[in-house]
Length: 68
Length: 470
Image (cartoon, rainbow over all chains, first blue to last red; front, side, top):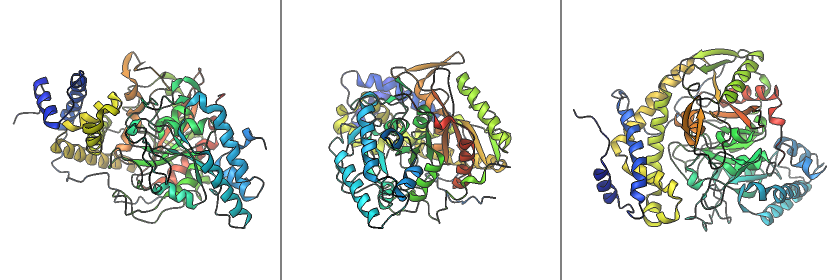
């Protein structure tokens, strides 16, 4: 299995175009580092085994804590 | 009583004076409006003032009370609202240019409960654009200044809420907290800020940033005022998908039970990695103080908190991108470029990565719950640093250069991500006179004990009684 890797600038431009993002005034050049930082967080999370965790969304509070 | 004495009172003190008819709601309104006139030019805590509305509401309260219809401690109390709480007939900008003319047709659920209890809106408070920043900078409405030193940030995103309470422009304000946005301004401004358990207070009628992480909470002078506000605002709301079902507790009646025998966990890792020395000293002193009050201090290993923050960041940004996608695509030029890029970065998170981040978040939340079996509450500093300068981008801590935003949010974000209740109370001041915050975290729906501990600590100190010279 191939691990997730960072985006190249060309891949980023292609995705940005697909999303319809504004491409003028150097905007995408400034966006690229933010996206890279986000991808790094996602790669960090890839290292966490969640095979036993269900796809529960949100932080559902299902348990009332009994206070002593 | 002089106007400056009135504005120095807590909600519960004001309520007692109004109930006894020693003070009129009209006098209260005039005192706070006068205070706003005096200090607002230096602080910029408000986006919209609603003086006429406030005076009209104060007159209504006066007439009702004179007619024998006193509703309780909030009757005749002015409330400041972060400008993302919808207010019927009053514009709600969410700190943006895009929504500068949005006038809601109803009140946010949390605020409407306060209105039912007799309170009224005295103004809409400064915030960072769409609540997506932990500073107090706003491209469109200027910067909210810290009342302890106006060259410094007030923290955010509920910046105006922190500034307005700390500078006595309002006795209580509402804020929202997605990564620390109630507790950070409370810490930097030297007041109390409380984020209850996820879903305890309805978010209906609050402009969202992140559906699974947004919380509503009060900013007040004291823990006691936070407790009385929570008592009014809690309750299930089927219009909020995250709302918690169940019977609300009474958050005030046990406040004076103290902290004898309460187990207080202090994390061994993470919080110490990046901590201003004066914040560390104040935190250590506050732990000793809690021990002297009967608290049992437990050294706690809390693993993987960096991962909690990474999962929170991915989830929050993906949800923010979904919420604001049309804003970015159709009116992106109206957004602060920094906020715009932050939102857009969420458009590069795949569905798989988002769901995996939610799984990680839930896994780590369950691990944290297990750790908390050993203790009743956790104590940490609220922020790693005190209020930075307004134009400061980075801060040096322990020889490391760290982005200001990370230093402000890294500790609070953990407990927004897992949804546990958390409160910030003042625990000291630096030599330069800047406030330092102590964060106390409870178990889910453990607000009663959490508030009890925070109140006991606060009563034993004088920090919350200090007022800025502004």
